[in-house]
Image 1 (cartoon, protein in one colour):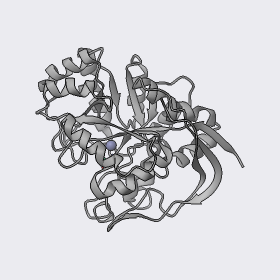
Image 2: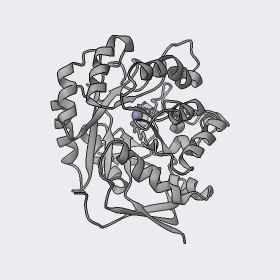
Image 3: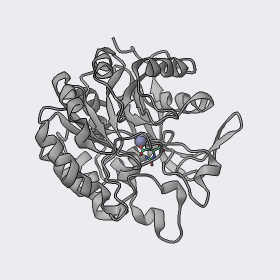
Length: 351
Ligand code: NCD
Ligand code: ZN
């Protein structure tokens, strides 16, 4: 039986949701991750530092691991103000500002309609070195859904980076060869998160032989060659601009499996086993730790975790569902067998 002992991972992009759902998402996340960056697309969105701090308290109220640390980003709306940016920079739990193009994804109605109107704020963020986290897809209805990320890079991101060359940027949940190439062509303050599911799957998993809503997320799964390019990026040494953000995004069963099903894959409980399986299949297990536990911490200038996680090659069946109170969430790969599992190893907490 193969085992691997790695620095405890962090999840730099997760949707924990709020209220009752936290009783499920927080304990699941902290089973694996020491730190998470919880996304601000709640209803209403997290647009101010006080709102983020009270959300943090709601999360801490349900944690079972005293060493688990949630981090946050401010939702970039058309009403964002400079004082909030300066306050966010001072807050140790806030790592950046999240930009959703209006209409791009779940709960993005409060997002930015025209980035050109936000140049004053972007200039303040550049001065503060406050990272801009980007959902990188254009929303034009005439642009094919499979081309929206690549088009965003050409028409929005590249000009933006040119205009604000010192601004730290994380292109979130990248899915294309174009995104990998773009990040690799940039200096170290430009990075990208990649999900476990975009590494493990492609659009055939979503569409071939029947539509499988579990695999539907945004940005949508792409062609196999894009998947291979993402795999190459994380399975090559010294690719420190790429780190794990699971984008685990649970939706209640009724809303996920309906005539107009919600976008988002619930992967928190399977992300590390799935990655271990994938890296093992490519004889790349020694490169897993940099992707899950080192590169992101370095980017956000946080200490590397001192706790560790043990991955064991030992089969387990993914639960068919997770429930909390009367809410049911189906994880990706529900009922299927994964060949790796993970257990935390007790150790010293971070300073
Ligand atoms: C996310 C959600 O459900 O909040 N959905 C998704 O498909 N990834 C939002 C997001 O990150 O795009
Ligand atoms: Zn997300």
